[in-house]
Length: 265
Image (cartoon, rainbow, N blue to C red):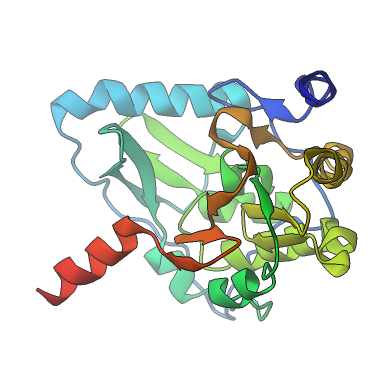
């Protein structure tokens, strides 16, 4: 079993911090703006001196990977930092102005509880974790300039989809639903954006492995990457997304419950 999964390591299971650049596909993100939309630009947010080296490192790594590139146009969204669970800082771009003048995509994103209901009767679960989520969705080349952002180090634009664009979840859900259509239709796979769940009614690892490798073949065919270190395979209970799911029951995760309790306090 382990040796079979190892065959996917070079092409599917990503071990690098910054993954390889995603290819352009027919599902590339389109950014269609309202008629009369104006370029958006503003003075950069001030960055605390102690955060400047971290900002420069993140931008340099993204540029080296080809995920962003130097830009020269009239757009310029603002950069800010948000704390991550591990205490590190996440690079975030304020696309609120761009989103206000972007036409909304109508493709629906699923309701998590509806997807979980489809797992009823399952006894074994695998939860492959897609590497860097939206980074695996490219932006249509003629729309990349609209994502330009400014930092103390210069102006850049995105080649792949960053967090913060209003239509990103819709386009990513379309990408995953189309690519995984056959697996979803059979009933052993459900997908919530970049959260995948494979479930089988039998607790036989060999049967579950067959479903898992069939899905990995599709992932490999479409140049998607999975982060092996965060994937949960052959489990009787997994988290998906924001819920604990098992054969007997499903319930909100402790962190979700705590967030509701704090919000109502």
